[in-house]
Image (cartoon, rainbow, N blue to C red; front, side, top):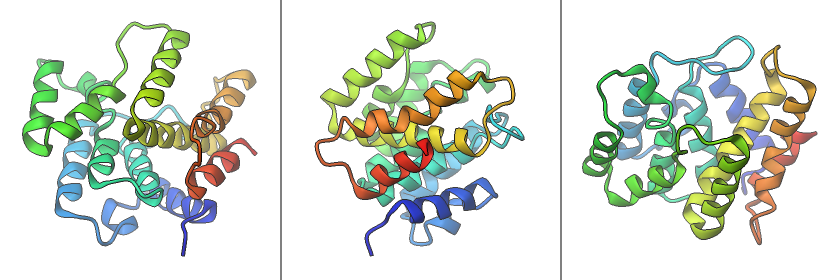
Length: 203
Protein backbone atom coordinates (compact mmCIF):
# COMPACT_ATOMS: atom_id res chain seq x y z
CA UNK A 1 0.00 0.00 0.00
CA UNK A 2 1.29 3.46 -0.91
CA UNK A 3 2.10 5.52 2.22
CA UNK A 4 -0.24 8.49 2.61
CA UNK A 5 -1.01 11.32 5.00
CA UNK A 6 -2.76 8.99 7.43
CA UNK A 7 0.33 6.73 7.56
CA UNK A 8 2.50 9.75 8.29
CA UNK A 9 0.14 11.08 10.95
CA UNK A 10 0.01 7.77 12.86
CA UNK A 11 3.79 7.30 12.86
CA UNK A 12 4.41 10.97 13.71
CA UNK A 13 2.11 10.68 16.73
CA UNK A 14 3.79 7.42 17.78
CA UNK A 15 7.21 9.11 17.80
CA UNK A 16 5.73 12.10 19.60
CA UNK A 17 4.59 9.65 22.29
CA UNK A 18 8.07 8.16 22.67
CA UNK A 19 8.34 5.45 19.98
CA UNK A 20 11.90 4.56 18.96
CA UNK A 21 13.41 3.97 15.51
CA UNK A 22 12.75 0.22 15.57
CA UNK A 23 9.20 0.81 16.82
CA UNK A 24 8.31 2.77 13.68
CA UNK A 25 10.80 1.11 11.30
CA UNK A 26 11.00 -2.54 12.47
CA UNK A 27 13.16 -3.52 9.48
CA UNK A 28 15.66 -0.67 9.96
CA UNK A 29 19.09 -1.36 8.46
CA UNK A 30 22.12 -1.68 10.80
CA UNK A 31 23.60 1.61 9.53
CA UNK A 32 20.33 3.41 10.20
CA UNK A 33 20.24 2.04 13.75
CA UNK A 34 23.85 3.17 14.19
CA UNK A 35 22.99 6.68 12.96
CA UNK A 36 20.01 6.76 15.32
CA UNK A 37 22.34 6.09 18.25
CA UNK A 38 24.69 8.89 17.18
CA UNK A 39 21.78 11.29 16.76
CA UNK A 40 20.32 10.50 20.18
CA UNK A 41 23.69 11.03 21.84
CA UNK A 42 24.31 14.35 20.08
CA UNK A 43 20.87 15.70 21.04
CA UNK A 44 20.67 14.09 24.50
CA UNK A 45 20.73 17.43 26.35
CA UNK A 46 18.33 19.24 24.03
CA UNK A 47 14.60 19.81 23.92
CA UNK A 48 12.27 21.06 21.21
CA UNK A 49 10.64 24.48 21.21
CA UNK A 50 7.18 22.99 21.39
CA UNK A 51 4.39 22.41 23.85
CA UNK A 52 5.77 20.37 26.75
CA UNK A 53 9.41 20.76 25.60
CA UNK A 54 9.75 17.20 24.23
CA UNK A 55 13.19 15.60 23.70
CA UNK A 56 14.86 17.03 20.59
CA UNK A 57 15.71 13.55 19.26
CA UNK A 58 12.10 12.93 18.33
CA UNK A 59 12.25 15.50 15.52
CA UNK A 60 15.10 13.95 13.46
CA UNK A 61 13.40 10.56 13.79
CA UNK A 62 10.16 12.03 12.44
CA UNK A 63 12.07 13.53 9.50
CA UNK A 64 13.80 10.20 8.82
CA UNK A 65 10.46 8.40 8.95
CA UNK A 66 8.94 10.75 6.35
CA UNK A 67 12.00 10.47 4.08
CA UNK A 68 11.65 6.67 4.22
CA UNK A 69 7.90 6.79 3.51
CA UNK A 70 8.63 9.05 0.53
CA UNK A 71 11.06 6.50 -0.93
CA UNK A 72 14.33 8.11 0.11
CA UNK A 73 17.58 6.15 -0.09
CA UNK A 74 19.37 4.75 2.96
CA UNK A 75 21.90 7.60 2.70
CA UNK A 76 19.08 10.15 2.70
CA UNK A 77 17.48 8.49 5.73
CA UNK A 78 20.79 8.55 7.64
CA UNK A 79 21.34 12.20 6.69
CA UNK A 80 17.79 12.96 7.87
CA UNK A 81 18.62 11.51 11.29
CA UNK A 82 21.85 13.54 11.42
CA UNK A 83 20.61 16.73 9.75
CA UNK A 84 20.79 18.82 12.95
CA UNK A 85 23.76 17.25 14.76
CA UNK A 86 26.18 19.96 13.60
CA UNK A 87 23.85 22.96 13.58
CA UNK A 88 22.06 22.23 16.87
CA UNK A 89 23.58 19.19 18.52
CA UNK A 90 27.03 20.71 18.95
CA UNK A 91 25.58 23.42 21.21
CA UNK A 92 25.55 20.82 23.98
CA UNK A 93 29.14 19.69 23.50
CA UNK A 94 31.91 22.17 24.28
CA UNK A 95 35.21 21.73 22.50
CA UNK A 96 33.76 20.02 19.42
CA UNK A 97 34.73 21.75 16.17
CA UNK A 98 32.28 21.80 13.25
CA UNK A 99 34.82 20.49 10.75
CA UNK A 100 35.71 17.61 13.04
CA UNK A 101 32.05 16.63 13.27
CA UNK A 102 31.70 16.51 9.48
CA UNK A 103 34.89 14.43 9.29
CA UNK A 104 33.49 12.02 11.88
CA UNK A 105 30.25 11.65 9.89
CA UNK A 106 32.25 11.04 6.70
CA UNK A 107 34.37 8.34 8.36
CA UNK A 108 31.41 6.58 9.92
CA UNK A 109 28.74 6.93 7.23
CA UNK A 110 30.54 7.95 4.04
CA UNK A 111 31.15 11.10 2.03
CA UNK A 112 27.66 11.14 0.49
CA UNK A 113 25.95 11.31 3.89
CA UNK A 114 28.45 13.93 5.10
CA UNK A 115 27.80 16.05 1.99
CA UNK A 116 24.04 15.89 2.52
CA UNK A 117 24.41 16.91 6.18
CA UNK A 118 26.66 19.79 5.10
CA UNK A 119 24.03 20.98 2.62
CA UNK A 120 21.39 20.80 5.35
CA UNK A 121 23.41 22.76 7.91
CA UNK A 122 22.60 26.47 8.13
CA UNK A 123 25.35 29.06 8.42
CA UNK A 124 25.26 30.60 11.93
CA UNK A 125 24.28 34.25 12.36
CA UNK A 126 22.31 34.50 9.11
CA UNK A 127 18.95 36.33 9.06
CA UNK A 128 15.84 34.16 8.68
CA UNK A 129 15.03 35.62 5.24
CA UNK A 130 18.56 34.95 3.94
CA UNK A 131 18.53 31.48 5.48
CA UNK A 132 15.30 30.62 3.66
CA UNK A 133 16.74 31.88 0.36
CA UNK A 134 19.79 29.63 0.83
CA UNK A 135 17.59 26.66 1.71
CA UNK A 136 15.44 27.14 -1.40
CA UNK A 137 18.59 27.40 -3.50
CA UNK A 138 19.98 24.18 -2.02
CA UNK A 139 16.71 22.36 -2.68
CA UNK A 140 16.65 23.59 -6.27
CA UNK A 141 20.22 22.45 -6.96
CA UNK A 142 20.30 19.11 -5.11
CA UNK A 143 17.32 16.77 -5.49
CA UNK A 144 18.54 14.52 -2.66
CA UNK A 145 18.82 17.47 -0.28
CA UNK A 146 15.35 18.65 -1.35
CA UNK A 147 13.65 15.48 -0.11
CA UNK A 148 15.23 15.74 3.34
CA UNK A 149 14.75 19.49 3.76
CA UNK A 150 11.15 19.29 2.61
CA UNK A 151 10.54 16.48 5.11
CA UNK A 152 12.13 18.65 7.82
CA UNK A 153 9.84 21.57 6.97
CA UNK A 154 6.75 19.35 6.88
CA UNK A 155 7.57 17.78 10.24
CA UNK A 156 8.16 21.22 11.76
CA UNK A 157 4.81 22.34 10.34
CA UNK A 158 2.95 19.32 11.73
CA UNK A 159 4.66 19.70 15.10
CA UNK A 160 3.50 23.33 15.17
CA UNK A 161 -0.06 22.25 14.43
CA UNK A 162 -0.04 19.78 17.33
CA UNK A 163 1.48 22.14 19.88
CA UNK A 164 3.20 25.44 19.12
CA UNK A 165 5.07 27.27 21.91
CA UNK A 166 2.70 29.56 23.82
CA UNK A 167 4.88 32.61 23.16
CA UNK A 168 4.68 32.33 19.36
CA UNK A 169 2.53 34.93 17.62
CA UNK A 170 -0.38 33.78 15.41
CA UNK A 171 1.59 35.03 12.40
CA UNK A 172 4.59 32.84 13.26
CA UNK A 173 2.37 29.80 13.85
CA UNK A 174 0.69 30.32 10.47
CA UNK A 175 4.06 30.74 8.72
CA UNK A 176 5.42 27.55 10.28
CA UNK A 177 2.30 25.52 9.49
CA UNK A 178 2.36 26.63 5.85
CA UNK A 179 6.08 25.94 5.50
CA UNK A 180 5.50 22.38 4.33
CA UNK A 181 3.17 23.41 1.53
CA UNK A 182 5.71 25.95 0.24
CA UNK A 183 8.50 23.38 -0.08
CA UNK A 184 6.28 20.67 -1.57
CA UNK A 185 5.53 23.10 -4.39
CA UNK A 186 9.22 22.88 -5.36
CA UNK A 187 8.70 19.26 -6.46
CA UNK A 188 7.58 18.65 -10.05
CA UNK A 189 5.77 15.52 -8.81
CA UNK A 190 5.91 15.25 -5.00
CA UNK A 191 5.46 11.85 -3.33
CA UNK A 192 1.83 11.42 -2.25
CA UNK A 193 2.72 11.07 1.44
CA UNK A 194 4.63 14.37 1.46
CA UNK A 195 1.90 16.24 -0.38
CA UNK A 196 -0.81 14.99 1.98
CA UNK A 197 1.31 15.51 5.12
CA UNK A 198 2.08 19.11 4.13
CA UNK A 199 -1.59 19.95 3.67
CA UNK A 200 -2.54 18.13 6.89
CA UNK A 201 -0.14 20.43 8.73
CA UNK A 202 -1.58 23.55 7.13
CA UNK A 203 -5.25 22.57 7.56
